[in-house]
Each structure stands twice: as C-alpha cells, then as structure tokens.
Length: 186
Image 1: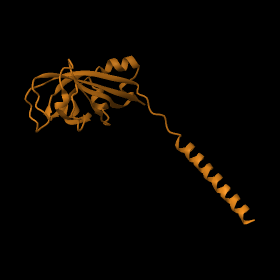
Image 2: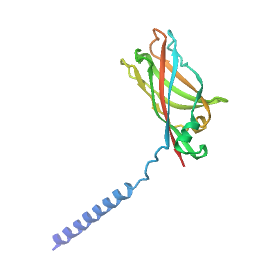
Image 3: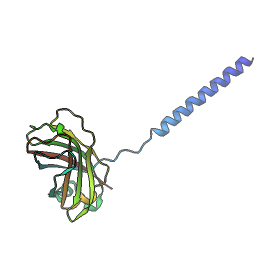
C-alpha cells in the first residue's frame, strides 16, 4: 500500500511541475512587439585621409554642414518633426571610394555627430574597437545606442570620424562612410 501512495504523490508532483513550466513559458514568451522605424535616413560621406598619420593619437576628419534632408523625409512619410521621439544609428560602414585601399592600418574608429551651432556636445553615432588585423577594404562599425534626435531633426549636422591607426597610411586616399539612421515616432 505505501508504494501506491508514493506513486500517486510523485505523479501529482510531476504534473504540477509540468503545469508550472507551461505557465512560466507562456507568461515569459508574451513580449511587447519591437517598435518599427517610421523611416530610415542614409548618407554617404567622403573625407580625405592624409599619408603619414602617426600611430599615437586619434586623427579627426571633420565634415561640416551636412544637409539632413529632414524636410524631405518628413514630407515623404507624412510625419511632423514633433512626432519623432528617437533617432538611432542602424548601420555604419567605412570603406574607400574605389575600394582600392587596405584598411587594416586602422585600429579604432569613433563617429561623432555635432549640432553645428553647439560644438560643445558630441553625440556618438558608431564605433569599432579592436578591428581584426587582416586585409580588408571595408570596416563594419557598431551602432551606438545614443538618441540622435536633437542632431538629425535640424537642417544640418557636423560629423567627425575619429580614427586611430595601427599602421602609417602610405598614401592619401578618400574614405567613404556609409551611415544610416532609423527614425521612430510616437
């Protein structure tokens, strides 16, 4: 008789564990849907890298007064500037205009944005750390989580690539930054 009671209590415990597991999984699997961007703003920005840059400091290549085209984007998507709550970097890649340079000489990159009328606050848009040492003509950057709304709802913005080299650039070349921003509305 004791074996029968032991079997029933074990099966009740097993059944209750299964029910708890099912309840837990169904509760935690109910997540809020990921917000979708209203539109994307994509830019191609060229800047000149000079030969002979030293290896000990970051080199800045400021590009000033880049038109955002915000009015066009807002009109195309039937959105008011006040509806925008967040602008985040979605994609960033550094290459060269003709894909003819080996960018393995680059060790780190940080892309900062500025409001042209207020250069005191920088907004990090993308970065890389410890780029692998191998022959490559494009470098993928990691998007930052900074909200860039204040910079990109204006008519213009300034962009500063900060680059630290691991090898001295042997010649001048034109670098091209492709960067995109996702715009989210209320």
